[in-house]
Image (cartoon, rainbow, N blue to C red; front, side, top):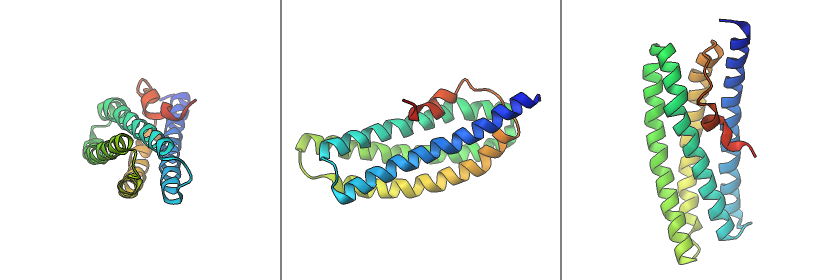
Length: 161
């Protein structure tokens, strides 16, 4: 593979880590705001739902694009990808619960942030484990020079203005 493709793959590995860092930052900010009561319930719910959409888009881009591309070129990654997709399903279930709680909170206009905070605490722990595993395993494959970026906007684009 040409050096340029290898450089692009390393850049993709770095972008994956940066995307995960941005998602970590977002959930940390929301959790801190819930704990400190710094923002109004409506603003927090809006931030929470935006975070849920960003994480969902990121994982859909991985499932539908990045993983498919990697598996075409690296079938040996099938067990790793299967575990990551399984994690995405678990995370998706938690995100559905967060959205449900946020919808209820918006409808009732009551202080329903505590249950959302508990769900986000669990989600943050699962995300951290998932991201570390993915960065350790998938980044290695990206660093080995696997090209193809048709999927990159969904995986990396959520943090862009």
